[in-house]
Image: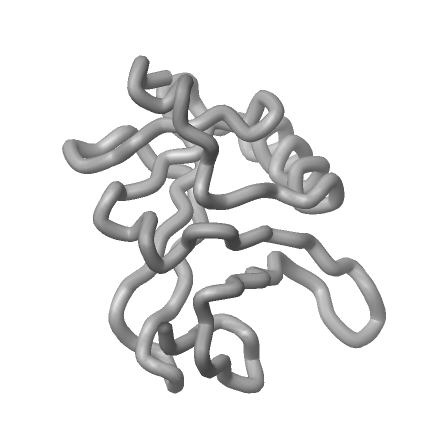
Length: 117
């Protein structure tokens, strides 16, 4: 973890369900050491921006955070769009997958995977 991150709270939180699911994926997929859970945004999607979520290596502009034993990599340029976001995991008959609850989103699409800020 970067020294600068120890005094900084992660802009993104994992719900207990999301944390549990990420831990299961880490174990089942045998994600190599040095990889963390990348959380970010990119241009695109029906509302203007879409979320990035996946395992990746540390990159030049990343800040590293510890989310209860899960290493998060967040590009510092994305932090403003993600500040206060909670990632949850739903596993029901009507929906299954990770869900982003972003207080900065001024508009979201029906699928929940893109937003405007």
